[in-house]
Image (cartoon, rainbow, N blue to C red):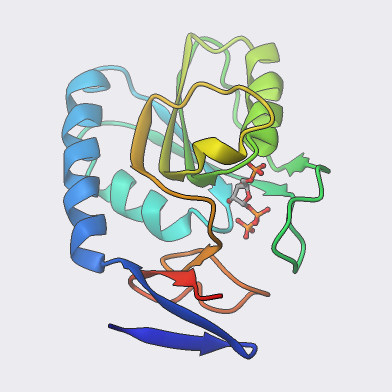
Length: 178
Ligand code: PRP
């Protein structure tokens, strides 16, 4: 079993890089079919989704735009603060087909905030792709059209996700070992 130690906390392998890449292929096939002639705007929610978003967008074979946005909710701890700020949404997305890319939907507060802001800008459609979802943690009900893995309520790191800003560069996803 692969293990890593970050800031004196122990993590063990949870989802391997192969499992992640297989899931990305499945989601990408669906996106290539659904958005082929739609010139979608991929909205990448920084920072955790960077590797997932990169893989998803590189697998999209047709015209698309990419917009990075900042949405901070966790700080350096393991719990959501409930405060969400969104910056950098500069592209005109009126009448555009929007695909939001997240690494994880936990309470749903971040995604719900983003959806509310984007809806006001009158896009033609909005869909969300998230690599991970923790349904048992949901506080706000949000629609996520493409989910990679539904996971239990455990803290995860790797493949973009951090613990106190460490671990983002791991190629697999690890879970906190109590
Ligand atoms: C994570 C994740 C989502 C959000 C999900 O971001 O990328 O944006 O938390 O949590 P929620 O459903 O409870 O709102 P985080 O704030 O940790 O920022 P980061 O991606 O920069 O690490």
